[in-house]
Length: 261
Image (tube, rainbow, N blue to C red):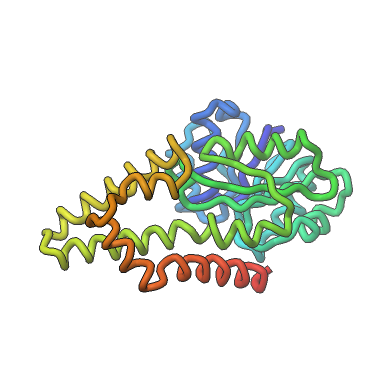
């Protein structure tokens, strides 16, 4: 019996598997990944030597459900039938109650998570919520998996839609800002490769500073000299309602997450 089976070998499932191995969460022969596409199975087998890569659910103590929402019920039922007593789902919009119903066993601990795409580079932000049977130990277990690829917070399940709107969709907002800044640099006269290199490092350096010191309002004030260039630029952003646009974007994404659920 494997310690854990990753059901779904897509980008997020593979990222979690790689993070768990790098963190020595388990040895390769304690893990399995279930993937229905043969070419992808070949890729996973080459990438993760020693991990069982299969198209059928093996016997496993626990499972991470990393499939499309419409496949969650079937994947959960198969995992429980193969012996899983803990299930961590990273499928968007599928409530713990639905996963518990698919499990068909009140003793199975279900944890639902909302990770985001920076988990692909080990810098994700995820939130988790436990189902009816999930204990603190079960939540800690889920944190140990997701923590291998980033930061994890616990929230009530009804807050996961807001997590989706903020952290789940948030990378797209930042990538849009990066695109706009590169275009602005070109408009100001910089060659595109120069603007691209500067903006990339701008995001990396600013993120590192924020992670180190926190308090974005203070950091913004630190960069903004009275009557200076940054103050002039910030005035234009406020005149164009950029702050309000971000508030509306997160609110709209949160509402859409509720609708999809």
